[in-house]
Amino acid sequence: GDSRGGGDGGNAQGFAPGGALYGVYSATPDLKFGLSLGSYFGGSLQYQDNWSGRFYSTKSELLTFGAFPTAAYRINRWLSVGVGAQILYGKINEKVAVPNVTGADGSFQVDQSDVGYGGMAGVLLQPTRTTRFGVTYLSQVDFKFKDTGELTGAGPILTTLLQRRGFTGKKIDLSITVPQQVMASAYHELTDRLAIVANVDWQDWSQFGEPEIQVNSVGRRRTLNLNYDDTWGFALGAQYKLADPWTWSVGFAYDTSPLSHSQRTPAIPLDQQWRVGTGLEYRLSQKLSLGLAYEYLNLGDASLSRDRGPVAGKLDGKYSTNEVHFVDFTISYKF
Image (spheres, rainbow, N blue to C red):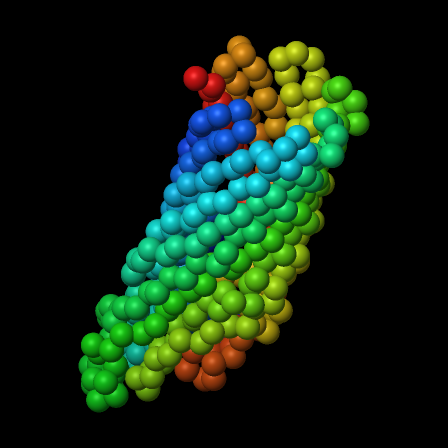
């Protein structure tokens, strides 16, 4: 619901393909080199142009693609260490409706990209043949997005106001920090067929500060860093060897919410996250394995309450359906 009127925005997220590539090279029995390629962080939402929250967001896209070269060394039977680098390409595409004094709405859009760098490290302890403990750290990565933006559909009155206030030609700062995180994990084989896995992680979302674009009919625009909270995540899973060559996996995870309803925006409607997933792996040979998995993600109702005055209106609501379904196919081959 919104004081300016409009619909619910429709389904803001549809089908989205993705992919990743992983490789490990054994230089010696104790020295390994790895490379991961794929998306690390991001999402995309697009609402209908006439929806109730159009002056808050009509499109919000933050996509990343990363390369992660790593090296790991086994010091002795029970201790291994690893280090790596993060090379992230990030792209932001934000669009918001602009309320004209008269007539149909205009729109303001920022479309920019950048490359950021970071590091990561890990320690693996293996006290017994059937038990492992690990701790990994990923540093923050900073993206410096700056753009003048593109204004379209502005009426003559709004255009004049924007020009008088120096709106056009000015760059706005949409810099983003991808949060640093620490994860502790454990693996234990209960029997020759059954193993349990678990992890706990902390993510520094208070440093994220996703900027929110605001443009109103008196020609002001600004970005507002929202106050995010750090999050904690917990996961528990199991792997069971049904019968050679089949392995079944199942898991559950929960992450706390980085935002309260008064801070949340439709651009990034983050809430607590509940995940459940299951999958099967089939080993065709000693070198080739195939896997198929499904995961269900529930993002909570993401209730929000924002008020920018009579021009943009007050936006109150929640997401009756706020979920994502993942289907994943994997191929693993040993040369």
